[in-house]
Length: 161
Image 1 (cartoon, rainbow, N blue to C red):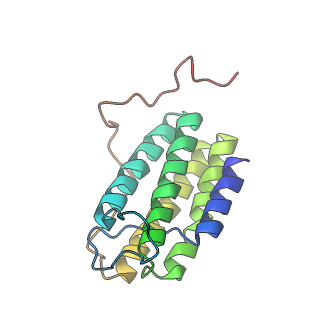
Image 2 (cartoon, helix red, strand yellow):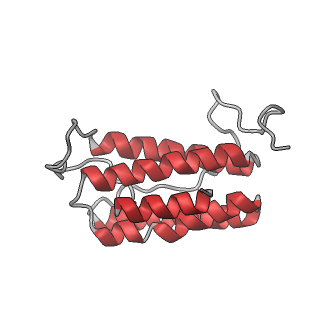
């Protein structure tokens, strides 16, 4: 299954992709068989994945970018599954930005990647605002330095042949 199809399937099957809410007064789903992570934990992970996705794409490490996109999509789906009070419109509006990023990654297109990341970031902030959490504002990273404990450039062993 291609990354694009995987993202679409996850969004549709989970009925979920939401943007970040740092704190939550929303109770977990009664259908949850395990203890649901706190929404702040899921969204903090999503924010880190957003950051890592950006740096991987900017470095041209498309394998790592694809991995981080899958992780981010999973985190957003978890938020929507565990916290059903997140409006479905917030979920469905994230589909296009995620698919656009998947397309950019598949094409290795730096320009489309940057534009798509801005669209995703705008979607995150729109969700925050709609949930009364507009004070949580995510941005596309502007600093040149990625997190210091990970290498984002493609490694020789990780390059596609």
